[in-house]
Length: 67
Image 1 (cartoon, rainbow, N blue to C red):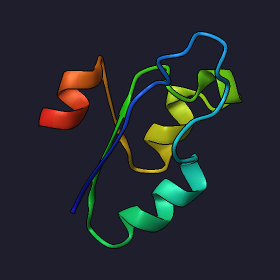
Image 2: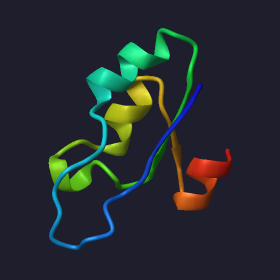
Image 3: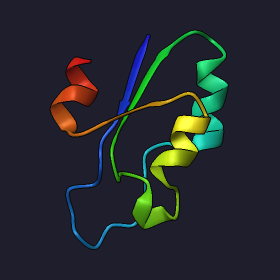
């Protein structure tokens, strides 16, 4: 299973699709997890918090989807 989270496209949107704690849960199932760099920042989740949860932080939408 591959899960990719992209940054919200609306500039005033502060939500993120999945938070690091949930991503950590999915990672325990050997799923591939990627997030677009900066996607969690408006919701106060840093790229480092996702990386610590075992998520691959990638530089854009296409790498998140394509891997």
